[in-house]
Length: 433
Image 1 (cartoon, one colour):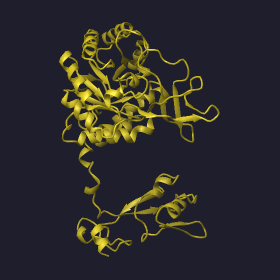
Image 2 (cartoon, rainbow, N blue to C red):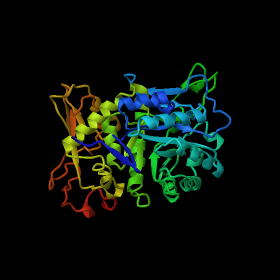
Image 3 (cartoon, rainbow, N blue to C red):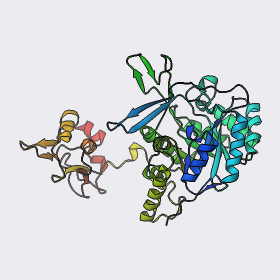
C-alpha cells in the first residue's frame, strides 16, 4: 500500500492532511477529537499577544453560498483570531503535544508589526513543544483594520521584515501564510523566501460579501442591522488556490520553497491536485466544519487507493509531478485539435448543449426535428462549452484529431507535423487574408 506518511519542513505526520488554523482548532477538546479521527496535524487557531482580550461578535459569524441541492459551495466568516486567553491556549497546546507526539502541531500567530511583540511571544510558543509556527499574514477582516493580517500580507517588505525577525528569534520552522487578496502572489512569496521562511501556506480567505438581506438591506451575516466584509473559503475558492500554488511552484525565484496547500480541499481528489501542483501537504477547514472530523478517513483512503492504482509509493513521489505541465498560454500547442462528440445512447435530449452553442458560442450543434443533436465538425472550435453544460457525465466528450488529419473547420493539417507559420489560426496568416 501507498505510504501516506508526510514530512514537511522537518515536521513529521502520519498523513499529509492537516486542519487549518480556524474554529476547528481553537481548543484542546477539538484538537484531541481531530487527532483521534485521523488527522495528521493541526495548525492551532491564531494566537495573539497577551493584553486586551479579542472580542468576537455575539451574533451570526458565517455567511454561505449554496448549490442548487443546498450543498455548501463557499462560506464567509467574520470571526477574529482566538478570543481565549493566551496562557490557556499555551497550556492546552503543551498538553496535546505531549499526548500526541507523532502528530504535527503548528501554532498560528498574529501580533502587531513590531519586533518586540514577535520576540515576546515566540519563546512562549517554543516552550509548549510545538513543531512550528505559521505567521498569519492573511486574514482580511477585523484584524486587518488593526494593521495585522492581510494588512501585512499585502506589503512584501513587511512580510520579509517580520519573517526575518521570527527566523532570528526561534528554533522552530517558520511557515508564512499568504493572502490571496493581492494582484500577484509571487511578490509576497518571494518576500517570504528573502526573509528566510521555511515554507509558505496558501491561500487564506478571500475578501468577500456573500449576500445581502433584502429586507434589512444589509450584508449577511447581519449584526444588529449592519454587516461587514469577511473571509471567503470552501470549494468555490479551490481554483484560485490551485493557480496560486502552481505559480509559486513553477516560479524560478520560489522553486523548491515548500508549500502547504489550502483552499477548498473537500475530497481526496482535491488533495491530490494540490500535491501534484507542488504542495507538500494540505490544510482543511470548511470540509471539516461541514461534515465533521471523520471526513479525513475518506480523504486518506481515496488518496491511498489512487496512489496504489498509479504506482506511487509515497507522498514525496507525487509532489510537484504536474508542475512541468503548467505553462503560459503562448506555449500551448495550437496545432492540437479536438472535436466534440455526442453519445446518442447517453443523450437525454434536454437540448442544453444546443441552446448554449447556438445562442452563446459557435452554432456548431445541429438539432433534427426528432431532437437528435449532432456536432457540425466544420463549425466546432473545440471550446467544450457543451461538455460543461451537459447534465449527463461523459455524454459529450472531446475527441482529438489524429496527426495528419485535416481540420474540417480550417482546412489545416493538424498534429505534430503541422507548420504553425502557415496555420490559419496564426494571427499573421489571418491578417494576410
